[in-house]
Amino acid sequence: MSIIGIYSIWQYIRQKRFDEKLRVYKNFLEIIADSTLNQDDQEKKDVRIRYILAKQELILFAPVEIVEKNSEIGPINFSNTFEGNQRYNLYLELLNLMRKDLKYLNKTISPEVLKKLL
Image (cartoon, rainbow, N blue to C red; front, side, top):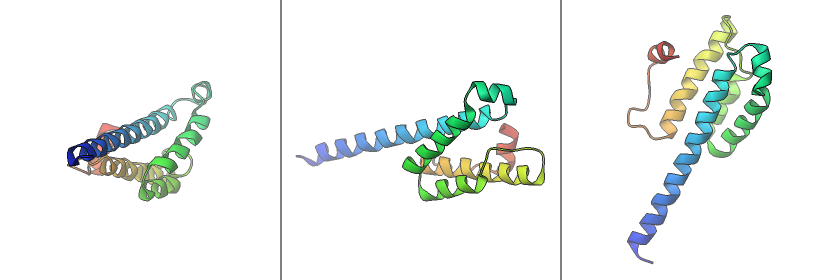
């Protein structure tokens, strides 16, 4: 097999891995967004079950630092309390870790900018 063939296979595997991570991270962010709905709507969308499944996918595909940061957040609850604000700040850190894992050139976005966007 030639060097070009090996490189092509390596590129293909790398792209597939990127696509899978992107799918996992987008799914996780959708669940976080759905967790802001009222309790009835959350139950209709099976947010708790989807959250458990998403955490399992994070364990399989994400680097250790993302898994550990997610474990620090704990249950999804970004209420306007000290604990809720702490979790929200950890969530913002998690977003930047996901960006870094996807190899964006500008790897981090400041917490202030993220808060404005969210």
